[in-house]
Image 1 (spheres, rainbow over the protein chains, first blue to last red):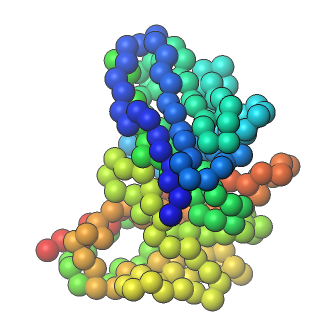
Image 2 (cartoon, chains in turn red, purple):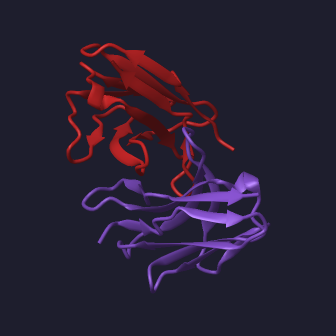
Length: 115
Length: 114
């Protein structure tokens, strides 16, 4: 199947710093990628839709100035958590679809801990 | 009503048991349906797509009832390795936009015990 690679798989950072997470589609081009967040014992919640060459679409309640998304190429989307705080600690996962009617492939996820 | 609603679980079953998970969705215009499996602290992985005609993959059977907006997953002869959280996932068009999105259920945790 298609491969989506996410990096880093885990990160610990100090409160107030910024963290960048990368999501790459390795064997297909993705004009759209999706960023999710999952808190313990909760479902995946869509944060934003990353669109290649244009602005991301954010879900209600997600601060676009805090969660910066850049989709500069057809194989790479980045999520930057700016001025991270302990409440931002979560599991962040990206996904992409090789085609409109295909399944979603997920990155390995990034476990962010802000101390 | 939640967009995608699943049995709350957890389900604790002995090896060899048959277990069924249910899921309902609220958007009648939803296009595609899936069951994903998520192991603890890992990313979700596709278990199977769900079709109106029903589909089977080994010990797993998935069914979709569009009229009732209901999806099910049946696992026969449970194995210890089946222990995971099972996510019901619905794909459809975003309202007022041209793109599509996945909506996840909260997941049902299954523990298969020896």
